[in-house]
Length: 459
Ligand code: ARG
Image 1: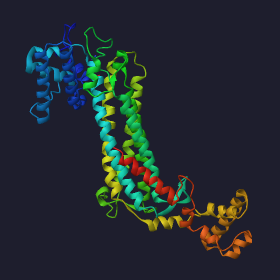
Image 2 (image 1 turned 90 degrees about the vertical axis):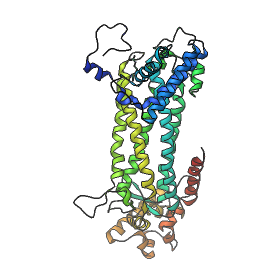
Image 3 (image 1 turned 90 degrees about the horizontal axis):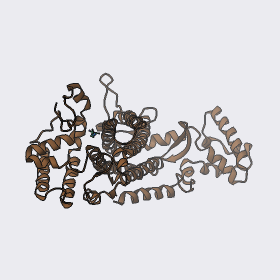
Image 4 (image 1 turned 120 degrees about the vertical axis):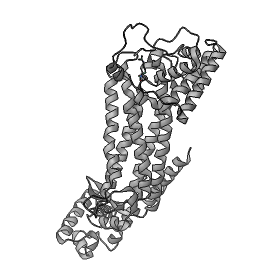
């Protein structure tokens, strides 16, 4: 096929090479950003007197027409074009004639694609941050409703110490707040405009890159044209922020899967976010959570793929870099889908406080509190720890809980025990006594809830 860039070549490229080279099946999603960038470019060329005013106006009008027709579906993207940049330019030239051929003055597809990706991902990041906030809102509502739900906190997936469910959910809120921070940082650092870097070295035309950057709402033009066309850090930063975010969703998914099993029964997911089995009529499967857990791998994969694609590239642009798109786009789509499913799944989740309490009653999770009790009465913690361990062993043998040990038996271990031991090891009391900053005690939980509310109230 004859190419716009067929400056030197005499022969046509092979069909198989065209297919191999083409990126339009996946970069066509950037058509709005491509057109927006071109409009800003035409305006700059006009302002600088590089393009004749009438021609620049015709270009802008033509581009707006293409955008309108694409949005309305009256213009179809031609998948045999090489990429979205070529397609838009080809249609423009078809429509307005030779003026269309002047649009590519003082730019190259190298800076154009770097620009389009930044514009595109900037928009996606703000959508992702909005969706992330919806998940945070759903978690917040659950946390508020479960401030009194005593459950076992775990280490090594062994019952460890009593906590409230709100505290556990708030741990995820902290993760998601950091995720939001990473996305914001990524967007801020990404917000530097590469257009005008041209192929790699800049241009001989008297361009105004600051004007173009401002038109496109970037904070400034990039300082180095070689970096402008060869930098894909912004894709990598986004992929790594998304990977960490998915890791968090995946951990929560794993817990949701565990909690909704018959072994735990701490929660019940709503019918709208579970599936049945084709042969087992009783089944209620947490497929959505499983899929979020499963999809985490492909987001990590995209990060690894792009890191690997970039690691050996000499400056400046290399066609390898076209490989940035599918992975980043897939990651963005995947994360958005997971967040969209997660918010209502959390919102509709029923908690079973009775089951949590029951689990908390078994497993001696108040053993630390028993030791703390003795420590408060004057015993050094290490000795108290040892004594409590012996009492736990005795209880296990007898098949009873710490609260069922008669006072006499306690006193046989230490004269420091008195009637108030029972109140000290009551689960609700154990939680209440965790008064340290950031602990599971009610004041700390209230403070955390307020922090999350404050975060969600900002913008
Ligand atoms: N489709 C290309 C990409 O995604 C656009 C840049 C092409 N530049 C070039 N010199 N062939 O990277």
